[in-house]
Length: 365
Image (cartoon, rainbow, N blue to C red; front, side, top):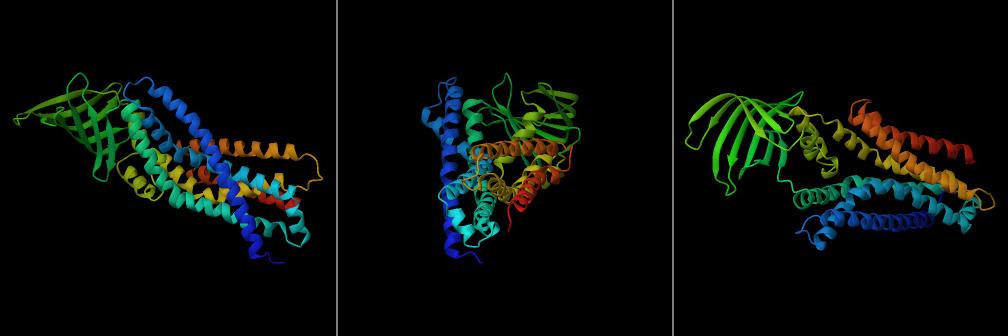
């Protein structure tokens, strides 16, 4: 028997509403805790207002929301199946001759659609908001005045000068491993943006508390050149700070990731972390479909059967287990200990096949 359009719309609408309500409830709880933490951090600064803190909390929500999506998909599916079973609607549908796969199709379709929307729409919007949050955090909470960017033309850094009034803008044409900058130009400015001097260097390395330049030519404002073998510039930056500042996956739109990965690799940086994140986003629709199947295996039981609470607890455990396994494999992929494709796609594929196999064994058609 073919499932009717009316029944499909009813199932899809019920599941979609439950997903939205649960997702909003989870976001509200997370927003409360994040805001309290931001208030605690802002209390150390005199010029950070409560309005700014509340705004920063809202800007951070998209990043947290994308982490919560698989949980919302799983828990809302479990609640929907439990709700339909408790009201005997599922039993009536099964007694009418519909198979469990026909019943699951509209719900899985909603989950996959949400996954596609997350990739195509929510992620790009969230990246813009998270980038704004990190800028406000750096300015008002961390009090950092360094800015780092990377383009096809090379690598750029703007940082303040320790124990001096002013800042520098540094450009390197490329970076060789292990973290050696090539063909550098360093421009010195005072706080009124007046040019002071220029320094050219063949290579530079970032060591603890300093930039070490080699084969240096220094030009003052009168264009008098002096040559030195070494030149030291104090800095509070570390290699981790530099890499994290321009390779944070959360601040990059899904549509921008391929181009940024290519630029990073052309300039000598390791883009494994971004590649893992890119493939992880591509796997989200499959992961969401797997969450629905896993929810069905533990919550679509007849009311007369005992152990419903235990099965529901198992479902919650499955959700957190999948989350930690996914995070662990992504960390291994980012550190190049396992292939990137395996790290990003294995959790979704394993969950999908597990849910599919359990449903085939439990159901009769």
